[in-house]
Image (tube, rainbow, N blue to C red; front, top):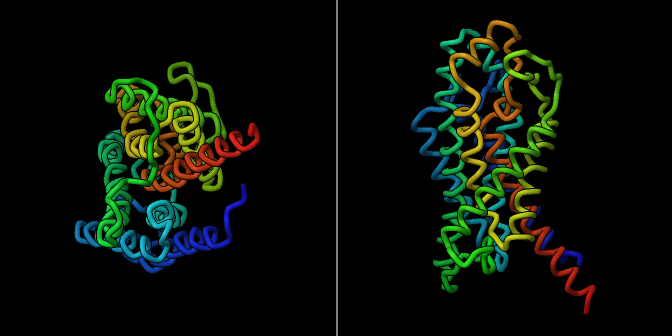
Length: 302
């Protein structure tokens, strides 16, 4: 089932708006035109005032894009903010660079103690964009129903059991696929098992997008869930990985025997902004691919 031209045009406009307004025009808030630019609260240029401006900007873009993309604003307007953040993530220097700037054990432990919470900020920025879309829907006079990522009847009759299943499935799919796909040089170690070098940006884009695409597809197709569950995982996966892998013993071994661009897990080699922005875009695309696949299957059997 081919998407109508006007729907494709609205999708392109939504993505382009995020790329231009956030990714390009908003770049001075988080990076520089020369030198090292790490888009993070650790070693980056983001201030508290800039964080507030970024969040307000995300809300405003979501609100405006609802009307520009009408009558598909609820489905398409949510793409703008993560698309813009994705540009920041790609323009940023890597986690490997951040580790090279913080080579000592104590420095790295401090960096990861901050990074485990940072994805929640970027997730909050994207949620501000989602909120702008929903406010636009309310202002327009339409019935206030969250159409984005609408769920079917869940896998279980218990609402909270469904929530746990959606989150668990999303987390497992994303964890496995990122570890498989975000590959670089891998070296064996007697204590750590293995360590992996900093993946290239293109590899990160492929791995994170594909992992969350898979999660969005699986959660929708087989469990009837919304893409909001893998979206939540995009804000939690880094923090959980830090809790699992980062401790004084493991990081001490890593610092002592390997260059700064090596990591215990490829998940730790991905900046929080990259994980969240690419993860949300992948989850949304996976969700709607599952919807289209189900529609195609139904039409085929008629």
